Image (cartoon, rainbow, N blue to C red; front, side):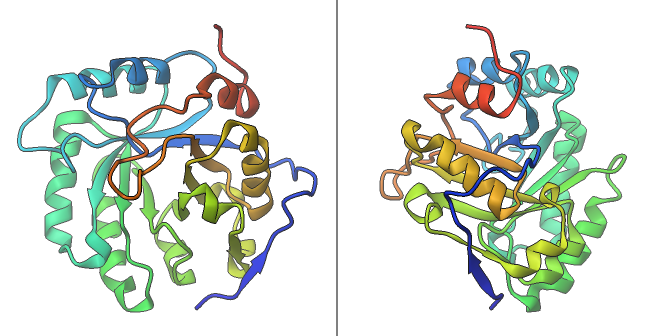
Length: 249
């Protein structure tokens, strides 16, 4: 268990350059406004995850291809969604899905969702990531642990998601001390249920804990019955203006 330490939420900003990592909107047919909003100028997007059908799907989807193409044409990195099921899915399964993502949607990298956290799964994760690195030119690899994993995982990906969960947990969260050995660009925090009035506090926590890629939304998981990432935050313009250069009304 990594040593954890609390971080004061009332302290001043550390000046970390923050950007947005979008863990995945609903299908473009169901959420056309959301996908359109992601292409608006001024949005400081580090990456956007394309989750077609809990993965790449069984066949190419022209609507997803168009949505991903608009983002990539705008200079936004698009990642394919691969569910590792906490390390229970084989490397061959994940690589087969990654190949479909690359062939059909020309993704720039991958989010390995529900990534394992324990030391025992490190060798298989290392093998999977090494295989993913052979697909395309320098694919961006994000390990979606959702909590602090064994520190060895930091050597196997471009970024780690070290928090994914509700605001009620995030506002009292702690950071593993080993993360101080790496720059903030290596860490991501994904938080749902963040009230608009607490947005600045949430941003301050991310800066203090050393995570430069964030996604905060006021959507909730409704007690585990809904996907809080499918819709855009109700305060989209505000979070963009706080993190980036702002957007036009």
